[in-house]
Length: 324
Image (cartoon, rainbow, N blue to C red; front, side):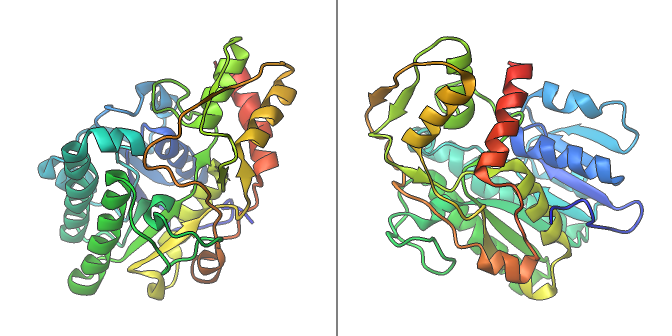
């Protein structure tokens, strides 16, 4: 279980785009700990320099400041790279509704630039971040690949487009692509600040600082919250999965289902505070319930997530106590 025993040839080089972000910086850290080389490409628009300053003295680490919308930067960053882990994107469903043109340029054209640069430079495999948002209004649980509904936001549309382009690159251009549909990832270094911050770090920070958090909607929404360690495992195993995984997209989650109200009161108990939440309006474009069937990823990627929500939230709380 996990990824500690995943092995690549000596001197294998990874490029992590969006490497200064939450997921990207954790990928960089894990790869360096395994003894391989990492290039981080980030324009620091949403990623943070402090997330990667931890690695600055590691001889296996290189930082490229660049934008995936700049094709020349993508070509330069992918030169001599074995595997690309493409995490660079702008998240947030509500923000995508406000900024559709930017999301198209960044999340679709930027990802396409990375695929083309990877193809030209002979990258072995292009593993990219997709999202559970591609399931849209499909009501059935658990969410299963091949059974998607109508998309509910520009963000979801960008991720669906990325998946379709990835199929084309595998089919026509020989670039092996693997899409990872992340379900509500959480863990260390996830940003608790800003209007579009993810709910778990935001709640923890507010409760630690004596503030009263707002829950959008009635709190009865459910999510398949997925600890960062499971996502690292999925990325590394996707690089080594059999060729038949190429061109496919996979659910990456723990396979559980947590309700926001339960999470909120669990956090107040763990943090030793007694604060009632404020209930606000539903967020536009949000999916009410998500829960993943991860059997396809188990079968084709060898994905075997070992970090449950309970185990992950315990470690996350400890990290935020020490770092906020």
